[in-house]
Image (cartoon, rainbow, N blue to C red; front, side, top):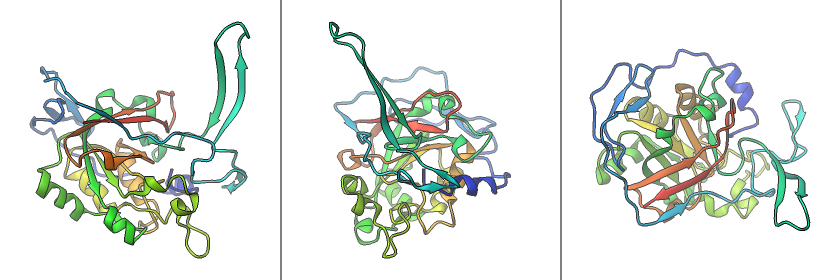
Length: 298
């Protein structure tokens, strides 16, 4: 989640957003064994039922941070958010050993949906949007395109993935594959063990989630309207930073029944093109997201 104010921001947003693609499109070859696709009336590309070639890989890269009580979150325990005092983002509630004579044990944990490496479902920003359990399984396995902005982010913590970054990627690697997942690699994941560096608060101490790299709103529109992209991802807390007008990227992307992943890890260990992302999204009924195990197959 990008900000403690996201729910209030969403409440005032009106509908009438353009659909991804308004009419059916012809089939096109997909990468990573996804097959050809068409665009349904809902605007979400759907896979064809034809025979697909099997995807192959030589290694799997874990793009997931280990979720722990002290992992940086968009709020702190005890912080007052919209009139309510926030509990810990992750806590051990109970530990239960069944029997001293058996090897079995159980732990009960409590956590917010939007902590650690996690999925943002459409319903996170849209009351009628797809909840995390409703994301089609075929969307959770997709060609992975990594936009590397580490150099810019090292010089400017508010760097953004712009349409020009996408065009440069395509100039080298070809058009973004149909039904792909586009991830930002800013190098920020390496700071997760150092909260001060990760939050990069300004001199006033504020802006915990805003002083991090993010997507530019124009890039969200480009990927939504001019490319066939099912999901976006960042290695920071949020798709947005303070150079967005409020929460523009969230509010452009998610209400169109798109989804994304925040707090990705180790994107530098995968190629910028050619890998396949596998997102182990939780399947909690009606939820707006949740921690996920995310892998890249290379």
